[in-house]
Length: 311
Image 1 (spheres, rainbow, N blue to C red):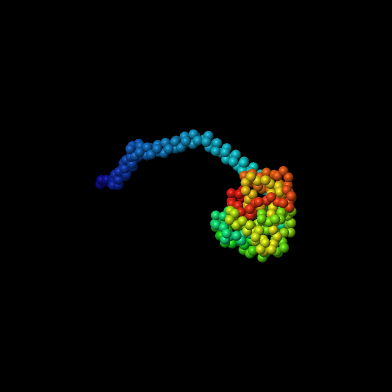
Image 2: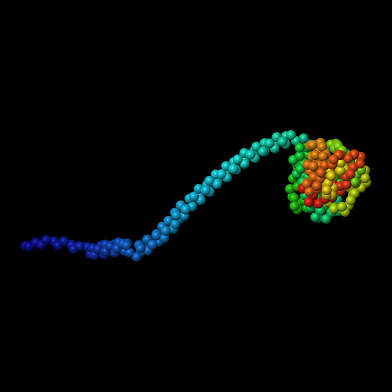
C-alpha cells in the first residue's frame, strides 16, 4: 500500500496582487524622484527665496536710516520731557502770580445799546474788541468787574455764530438789560471825549461806561448826549495831557479798557497810555503836561474805531 505525502497548498492567489501593490508603490516612489513636478516646486521656492533675499538686502541697506530715526525719536522724547518740566514750572509760576492778583472793585461797562446804528461789518469789529477786553482782564493784575450790557441783536447773533464759547466766559456779567437797570445812577460815569471833565483819578467805587460803538464818525457826540439825557456822570481820559499823536486821536473800545487796567496797576496815566497805544499811532510824550482844566483831547468816541486799531 503506497502512501502519498499530502501536497502542500499552493501560494495564495492574492500574491500577485501584493506584487502589483509593491510595483505600484515603486512607481509612486519613482514619480517622487526628481522630475518635472519637483523641479516646478523648486522653481516656486526659488522665487520666494529671491523675494526674501531682496527684503533682507533692503533691510540691511536701510539700517542706517532706521538708526537715524531711532535717534531722532529719542531726541524728540527728550525734548518733550524737557518741555513738560518747563511747562510744569511755568504753571507753578502762573499759580504764584495768580495768588498775587488783587481784583479791583471798579466796574467797567461796555454799553452795547448801539447795535442798530452799526452794519454787520462793524458789529464784527466790536466783537473782536470785546474778546480782547475779556482776555486782557483775565490776565490783569487788578482785574475789574467787567459788564456787557444791552447785549443782543446783531452782536449776540455774531457771537453765537463765531464764538460759541462766550457763554462759558468767567468773571464777566453779560446782560440784555441796560446798565441803568443794573447800576445805581450816582455810580455811573460815561467815558466820552466830548465831556469837558477830565478824569485825573479813577474812583474804584464807580462804574465807568465805554460806548460799544464802531461808526466811523457817523454819530459824533452820541455818548456825551446820552449821558446828559440820562443825568449821569461823564468824563474823558487825560490823553491830551500826556500824549502827542501824529494820527487821529481815536481810541478803540479795547484801548480804553486796557488803559484803565494798566492805570490800576501802574497808577500813572502816562505809563498806562504808552503801554497800550499801538506804535502806528505815532504817539510821543508831550514836553509838559497841560493844565487839566484846559484839555487838548480831541479823540473820538471810545468805540469809534475799526478793528485795525484794536491791536
